[in-house]
Length: 212
Image 1 (tube, rainbow, N blue to C red):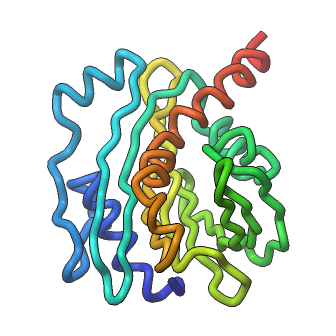
Image 2 (tube, one colour; image 1 turned 180 degrees about the horizontal axis):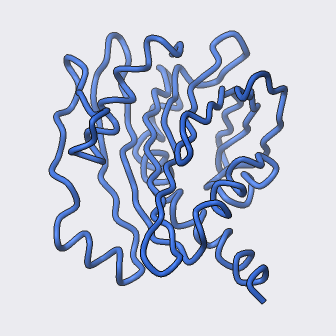
């Protein structure tokens, strides 16, 4: 999915997970916005649990799975963003990521080759990363490089929370394409939604060490 074409899809994903955002205007044919976090979801977050909203939709000839997940982290936003901006951390910080290799960076836009998967199936593809403001990193598939999936796009958003903490929001939508990988669609979607919890488990010990 090229950057220009993906813009409205990012808006839809933001609307789905972050209703009320000025950027959230769903694209035609995509899922409608949900309400902002419910009292139950807010209670779960403050109790240390992750909150997830799964999403499936059709866009053009693509069939997407994914959603939006939230997690509070005992670390300042700048520490979380620094950890995510260093792609060498991704194999530890992101679920089922076997390798992440920086291919280059020009004017704040980077290209990263990823290998992700489990015991039976791996997918190799390249994403483009862009820091769009002080709290958001967006990514989308680089279709000019070899890719074992049809499309992927999404974002990491880190916002300050009371007590020196951060609220991590990860949104992602993936189109596996046709064939055998489609059989693993549900498991992969669940795995994607676990990203904020794994980021928390990676970042918090490092933040604690820095505070000592």
